[in-house]
Length: 128
Image 1 (cartoon, rainbow, N blue to C red):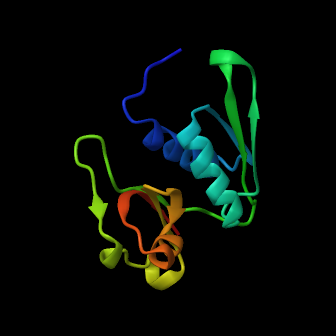
Image 2 (cartoon, one colour; image 1 turned 135 degrees about the horizontal axis):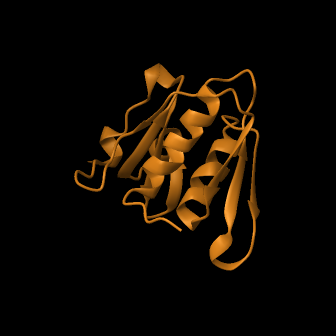
C-alpha cells in the first residue's frame, strides 16, 4: 500500500489517465471524501456509476465512465495552497457548462448547490 499526499488529486489523475487510455472504468483506493465526490459526479451525470468493493483497508472504488464523455478535470485547491470562496464569490464554471466541487459546512456539493444554499467553502476541483 502506498501513501499519497493528495488523495483527491490522485483520484482525478487516475480518472484522467483511464479516459486517455480509452478505459471504461478505473479503480481507486477508497476514502469517504472520494466516495462523496464520485457520488456527486454520478448525481450530476458526469460519470455513469461508482461502486465500493473489498473489505477493511483493501476497499476500492470502481468508477465507470460514460464512453462518449471526455472529462476535463482540474484540481483547484491543493494541500499547500487551499482555495476558499465565500458564498457571494461562488462563480459558475465555463458559464454554467461545467461544475466546481466544493466542500462546505453542509457537505460536498456543486457550485450551483452552494449558490442556492448561500454557503461558501473550499473549492476542490472543476469539471467540464
